[in-house]
Length: 181
Image (cartoon, rainbow, N blue to C red; front, side):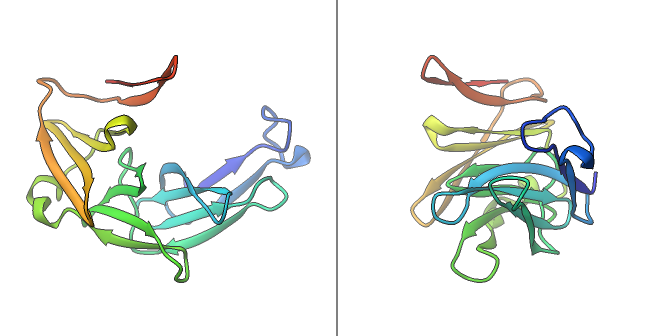
């Protein structure tokens, strides 16, 4: 729970160091894994924990590195998606992790100050990114917060599907994006 593990190259079912499997510790409970833009043309993996944030860089087991970004900000379980920048919910509200040229490559910003009464102290059940609509949706036991980029900030809408949504996933079917709840 406090680490990310991966198998060796071309041996995805052998989870032993003898065949290249490794474990990178975070020191905190891992809550979300999100593929993000890395440097230049390489992707990276943002590893969000309960109270910390890390980015895993590399293209194979030969060069994977876990770089700590924050020992204060993290993301609650099931809350993180990449909506142009990674967005997740931590104890301080909805947080955007924008890329920057500064040390660590990402700067955090609370984006939910105007709606903190709707999110603070709440437990997310799941989240999903509707790519075609450019919307991040965060589900709670009594409704949904929908987030859309607007100018230099974000706009929020509260939704109610009339039932509790516990699982949400998006993907493409025959080239058409679909969101399933």
